Image (cartoon, rainbow over the protein chains, first blue to last red):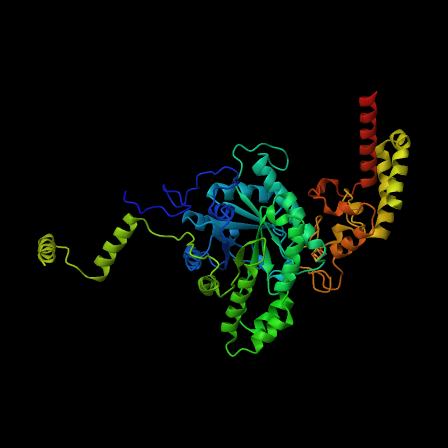
Length: 370
Length: 142
Ligand code: SF4
């Protein structure tokens, strides 16, 4: 089989296969490698489709190609029903994408969750993000039964126990433990502010190896938080990725502020958007400005871009902020053999060539004698 | 703290509890426990009380029943994400913990709730356990 040369952090035997295990690594995924090498990481959130069409997922992932190190598959975020994170990960891991599977405690109990962790790891999910989840009141089905059997902390501990001690919460043994890099969420922008850095410490104690923050629109507040995090030495025990995202307009900003739990948007941000002629453009600019400030904060290991319904801007935002320096994250590319087939197919379908052997020989000799 | 003194009193009563039988004591004690904690802390009888590590604010009153700290949805005014008119249980817990002698306890990672212990007396279980530990200690030093 003809093959293209493998990219960095890619299994030469197939893009969908796990990477060589490295000493000190928990997972066999790409994101952990990027972070542990000390490179500034970029992750992004995939907008989960309201459909049963795999192509919808692939199209939404393709716009991140070559720009991000991991794709978050959200688990009914905001308590709104969409394709499940498990389903999205099943589709993406087949194609070689590095996925970050979110698990929210809202919808499943400990029995279901532990089963999903095994299934996910078996499919090649390298990163699992443990969340409490928004309350059901926030979503499109407020009549649903909130489960919250575990909370994010006990969920972290459960998955860590499964991975490191090779057993279920009940103590029953696992024959192959899930090799996953464990993530959690932080929100430095919600009260009680004094508690927040301690809560991060608690998450690290429970097993968190990386965290992604809620949207950051208030850099001074983040700086304050990070200072305390550094004083406690937490940035050395855990990779911190700061959540960012473009706001489409002042109106959206207002709506998010009052309807999405836990998002803090200062008045200054809204005033800036309102004053702009092209609000969407300004929203993007603001996001880039925030990234530029955030990347300089000591202890920040990367950014997590949540560009809900503006995913097409992610590449531009990442490019313009220059956070990747000259690094190129993994990009889905066809193998040389696939590329040959594709080219030939293209020729057959579009150039309308003659397929009669006699004519083919004549055409070939004509082009070769030219 | 009254509560800690109270638990040692309970432990001192261990001979009494074992004479009566912990199983038989369960019903009346549970009744009292429910009344006392219900009145003071809006207790939900989860059967594995952690009030002493949550600044005496019952985490089972958090709509998400979080036992390890506030979710990310706490409103700017300190109220709950799910019930906008209720102060977040964990904001209260954090304040309460600052005033407690054992204020570090709120930082411990709590295990998931064992639903099979619901509606049972945490007082008796903790006391029985403490008594068992004490006896083990005695027999190992003897
Ligand atoms: S805001 Fe506080 S009380 Fe409400 S769900 Fe979150 S942690 Fe629980």
